[in-house]
Image 1 (cartoon, one colour):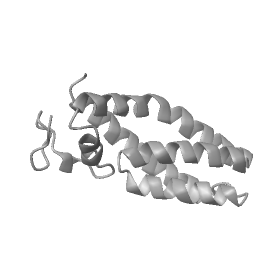
Image 2: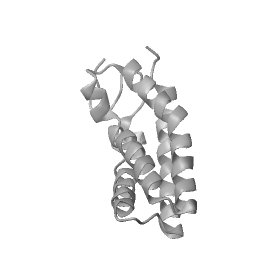
Image 3: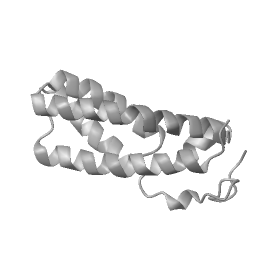
Length: 131
């Protein structure tokens, strides 16, 4: 299944997303919307638990755990071109390599960005046909 312009075959406009861009992922999987939907469901199902572990690591001051969880989420968010969240997670991962965990204001930014991305990936999963 291909995109025409910015429209997925079923009519979901890719410009409806502001925090993700699933078009590159769709292209990478040969236009297979079922695969994108499956990946989106996997993100929606697993990312909240990973994010919760990142939050706990920040509260506990556990830099190594913060690095691990931010690295995992960074890869998942990059797949959907969630650029702001990916950048914040990259910064978190780098800081953790230096023994630092997110400060409260950084954690608040991560929480806000993650919520927006999770919402859009959930909408993406619901808008695409299942495989």
